[in-house]
Image (tube, rainbow, N blue to C red; front, side, top):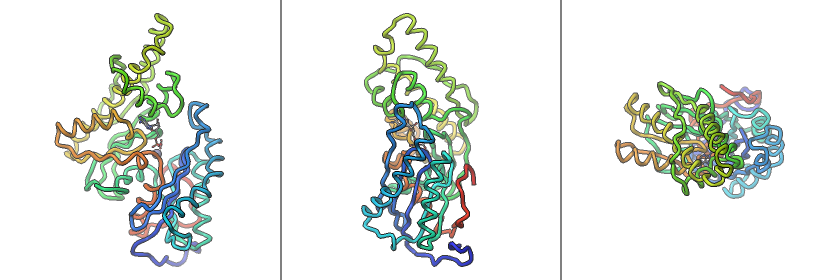
Amino acid sequence: MNRLGNTEPALSQAPTILAIESSCDDTSASIVQNGRVLSNVTAGQKVHAEYGGVVPEHASRAHQRNIVPTVAVALKRAEITAEEIDAVAFTRGPGLIGSLMVGVSFAKAFALARDLPLIEVDHMQAHVLAHFAEDPKPVFPFLCLVVSGGHTQLVVVKSALEHEIIGKTIDDAAGEAFDKTGKMLGLEYPAGPRIDRLAKEGKPELRFARPKMDGLDFSFSGLKTSVLYTLRKEIAREENYLQENLADICASVQTAIVDTLVHKVKLAVAQTGIKQIAVAGGVAANSGLRAALNREAGKNDWTVYVPRIEYCTDNAAMIGVTATFKYREGLFVGQEVAPAARF
Ligand code: KG4
Ligand code: ZN
């Protein structure tokens, strides 16, 4: 449907798509031409670091400031003009409502001004399809472990747009487990990359609780409690315990989270028989997780796909790549579209 909702858009064989991502605290714009990423520009938000987590109010305001310059840079880097865009894609959800609203409204305005078709994208589906932003691309069906600050899912990816969630977290996401335990250790938000760095200098000698979840679902809240109790006990005994053992604590936290993730992937492989494993989301940047999966790949004859870090964390290239699959299927939405958690 075009903006008047009554005629079909003339479809391009090699669509040039402007994609927008604004679900959390990164404002990102990308130009994707016939499935190939020409540019991917992301403006982060430093404002949240001092609060120990994303402050939604600050996030929406920063998106509002960043969106126009971010899109301008994405067009410039791709050497594409606004007139050459065939469709506009945006993250519809899940995410923070005020943050999503900025990206959705920008996409609608751009599409309305140029009478372009609009494509809504599910943020989680896009994390999975980020693997198609570069080579080698996984072959269907594959298993995808999506681990970010907001979500932890195991997905059977049957085709580009047919995804079945076979496991998910019942409490904290894997990224949250890194960020919340990091906060207890006095590390700035987001603590994941900081724990990763410190873990390299430490030994995983502390045994934190592993969740006792049956099946393919995840739980990380027990780990937080386990770290908290250990810290309390040790600090009561030795005041400088945290400062003197920070690297070992980080290595132990990381090992507990990575062990849990890898254990569930092994279960999923046993259950589905699929040995093509893809990892997506911000936590896929974790060096311990990458190393553990590669070790398992060697032992079990798996093929493991991890996108480059720029495509693991929130980015608009994954939105553009997903939108290209939807464009080819003619899956457009009208101007009445609004952000939604599920659609
Ligand atoms: O996918 P993402 O950028 O945003 C969400 O959709 O949530 O993921 C952000 C999460 C944060 O929790 C951050 O701490 C975590 O990914 N993260 C990491 C690493 N890099 C980012 N966690 C562990 N190790 C890393 N190297
Ligand atoms: Zn994400």
